[in-house]
Amino acid sequence: MSEVKNKFGKIQTVEQAMEHIKDGMTIMVAGFCGVGSSYRLIQEIIKKGVKDLTLISIDAGDPGVGPEDIIKNEQVKKLISSHIGATPRTGELLNEGKLEVEFVPQGILAERIRAGGCGIPGFLTDVGLGTMVEEGKPKVTLNGKEYLLETALHADVAILRAEKADEFGNLIYNKTARGVNPLMARAADLTIVDAKEVVALGDIDPEDVVTPGAFVDSIVRGGGEWTWAWE
Amino acid sequence: MGMGIKDMMAKRAAEEVNNGDIVNLGFGIPQKVVNFIPEDKTVFLHAENGILGAGPAAGVGLGDPELIDSGGVPITTVPGASYFDSADSFALIRSGRLDITVLGALEVAENGDLANWMVPGGAIPGMGGAMDLAAYAKEVIAVTTHTDKKGNPKLKKAVTLPLTARNCVKLIITDIAVIEVDDKGFLLKEVFAGNTVEEVIEKTGAELRVADDVRVIDYDAEQ
Image (cartoon, rainbow over all chains, first blue to last red; front, top):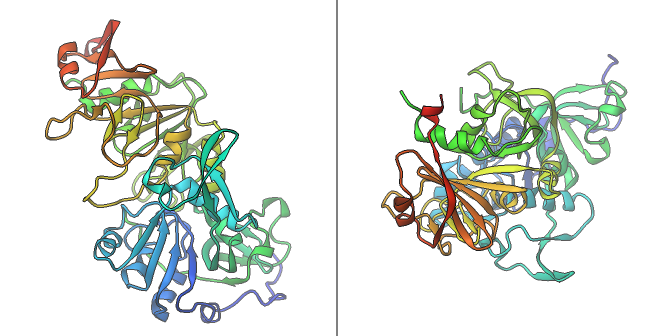
């Protein structure tokens, strides 16, 4: 193992990374049931107290892990997500009119994020056709079939967890902590990665890289301890 | 002790699974289906977050905290498993590679329309992956009680609750019967032992045609 330098200035303190987070921003929070979410960066957003955020996340997490901690602290005006069933407080805030939620079918949400990171402004799908999901969306007929026009999602900042990062930001994920993380890493102006381990250039085999470092702007060693809902 | 009805419903759903199938199981009774797949069939379980080849649940505290199924439960993997991102996971579904999904249902219409994601006025959990799964799995099996808690039919001429996907359900396994959805509507194929054809017709909220040779499923007698 070589010595970790910081040739690209991407390895930052949590405080440096948090300077990018401002009121009113759209933030992608990676993870699924909290797995793949950065516990530390979520706690720092709460500590900073930024307001009027729009969050994009596949679900609201589980109680105590994932995006719900930010939502509970009433820093979020709008959530774009596919599921909030495991996080009762998010549902309460929705019912109290303190939170707007745009529900998106999970696969379409993943694809909208993917599109946002690929320079594709939108796409056609029949998932959600005839359901509440179609409200307000343009319909397009192609080859005699009707489709919904779904738009790409892009964010100011994405925060995600990775198993390993090198100095350039090449990333490897762990098991199902991959999920939407590689998609979100590409779909934001600024991508902050909480890496469990930071290694020198060359210490990740190019064949193993899942997210190329070109998509990563800031690398922090997050850490933080929590227990999962089932423990 | 005989089998409970939930296990019988899961066992019946497992009969639909063929060797080599890629299968996605929803929450509740559908999750039990895995317990009834015979050992001579190799099946790859898919979970929406990004795994093909999910294995049994990991013991409490024994699993990797970053290896979970779509319900957030720590799991294991089987030989041949793979991890991928969520876009690939839904590409697998929408490109027609998912052979079977077993989902819960609130209502099923005689044209195969499915409602299973929200009750107006109740808590709104969100649809998760249900809309993608129902629209694009090669076979959608709905597993549900035949009637709701008040005794109202859940199999209807048309769904009244918010729609999940149109014309998607091919087979319905209830706590009293197995019903196929074909071009003409509901066709009663099987009843669970202890239930009569007349009773099933009475509890169904749309026309129910009856197959020529109705199977009586009696798993306890088969054992």
